[in-house]
Image (cartoon, rainbow over all chains, first blue to last red; front, side, top):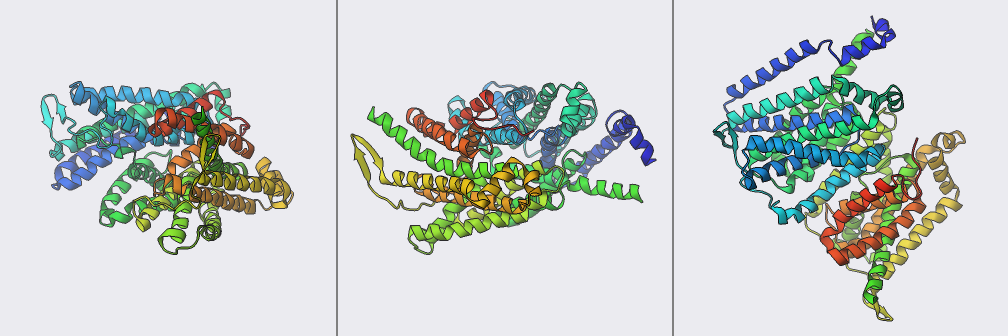
Length: 337
Length: 290
């Protein structure tokens, strides 16, 4: 069995990425989502619902990051920049231009894509860790820029307050209405994650990403346009992350430069380190583990960030492939047995 | 006119310290191909160690404080290299893993310092007071001192790299890791040595700049970004490039602060970075890794 798979490379590829098993996996995915939706109704506690809402929003961010970092192998560390762009543009459009939040989130996605394209253009000319440093420099330089943006209504250090509530076709969803928010964020999260992992990454684009990541020169020689796909990786990843930012802005009704602070960045890093890169559903599981773990650690508030930092280092050293690596190792053992 | 010259001189002195930070970053990358994202927090760590020894708890004179800080910094460098970086070398995607780990380390150091010393800023009094006036141009003695110290450290490093056996081993490893290992150079030892050296250099820079920029737990990211822009302009892995680039960018920064205000310093560094990457992504003296 194993040898026959190795002899025929096309089969190996199709079994992992394209059509085969797509229907079955999709059904499983949506059953899990439906289960979560039901769970939201069963949970009575608003605090637990709040934690899950954060999980769903983070899922979009981490899935997008996984797309570019794990699948496309581009060392992009400007992910929270896209998130901030989404949050700020959606908040500003709904506050100053009076857009209804759903429309402003859609516009935020466009803005996010544009910023992704802007960051992609210099990055296309760079290699490996140069990309990491450039994108991280953008992340570091953004808070001062937001500070300067006070003149155009970005709120400076205090941020933007009073972002309008989400308006679902006439129904105002207040922040306190956790049950509706649970379903709304689950719906957004589920659709975005599905599109990322099942549509984009199982399609041509995903194949091209993995080919570029694993054998760049070879991929180019068989006609994968490296620049085009790297550019697309940035844009797609930025669009989805900006949507997450927009949802976050309307959920919390406050947008501050804290989004770009240490805590958010560390959280994102731990999530991807726990889950493992480039192996669905690793990163998504990482989000669940980390957001819930982070809430359990609230009582150690002073040490929480330190612990998150330690978690990143320890996890990367001992479990370089995260949770996804564990299952894969077991599967490999099973194959051998 | 004299003002312009004053700004130029102040930019040059600043550039010398930036050079110290950037050369450490470049040295480690050159030898081991590891980009240390914790470089900035190690700069902060240097400042805090000196503050602890000189101001906060032990009232040592500054020169003694620096002498004590150097072995402490070197030891932390050795431990970091041995415990958290070396184990990653064998993993297949070690590049992204080392980025993750050094970023994680940066956050550990930063939050650790914040827990121990609190979030406020600290300062070390300047060890040289007064100014010197020459033909209408004033320059503080302190800046002259840090310029001299930084330059002599860079000179010492250059001498070490070119004239000693260990230095030659470092250069051999930078040029060809495999070849160096085949002729009997202990590659791991070289990695540890360069890492320790780079921590010492950036730590000393942190001490020297403490009276000017103050010390705060999160204060390392600014110098790190600057060092990175310098290293990129000079070419990753090239110490000569870092040296030239540090002065160019130090002077540019001084003029930008003068004309636009200090709030624009960081955005300006980012713009410089983008311009450099667009025009010459491999830097002045850099070569692309194949």
